[in-house]
Image 1 (spheres, rainbow, N blue to C red):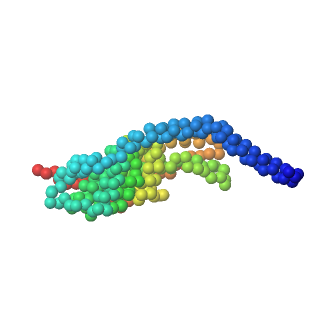
Image 2 (cartoon, helix red, strand yellow):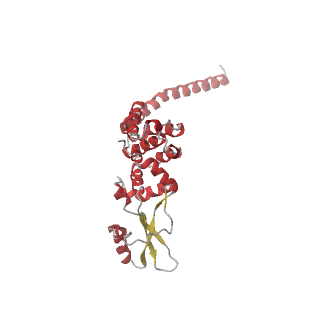
Image 3 (tube, rainbow, N blue to C red):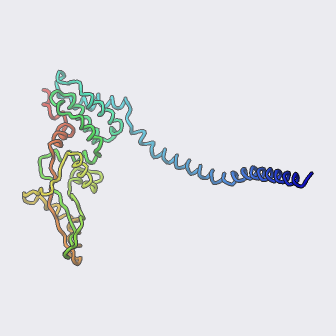
Length: 281
């Protein structure tokens, strides 16, 4: 064998050995990763179990056909108890269909369920069916149970006072900042679960076109703002700013009012439909 042939054979053998060595190394490399992979798998499995546990109650809250049927036959029928049978009409599909579908996910919330029942009853009563706007379902889908409670307050003919409380600098050229925006006692009055979120709720009801908060609306009747201006939260801010150099407190009296759309929505969805018909003798 010539030197050239020996060199080629050595190269081939070396290559074979290198590939063989790599092939042998791969299982070792995989074995080294397996414990980590197993731990990751366990962790993911634990997370998956936790997620399933967290979602389990939600699965139970989603209504099925039987629950919706029971709701219509009991709650909606109750709303129509004073409506003459000849005046009960087939509801518009673009109202009843989306409303029944939405109940699958909101039926477990009593305050929202009540609004859906009124809407469905109104859509089936010839006296009120024209006012049951299809857009009301979309509004219902975008409000919380607390906001539904607030709408019952807005069904009343009365003032809805609000306060904006600002920190202002007494130094020229320096501005200020809002400390309280649309502060009110409406959430507490309505029995909201999260009354501290009332300003956010008011923003959402305004976004949906049900209420508005004009910049310069201020009630002139005496004592309307007393409870707000004497509230511990407002008093505390005023005292703090009075004791802070170059700072002052500015309070702007404001108010909320129901829009035309809001009045129709409240009439159809919020006010008990059975009360719109005189009781049968």
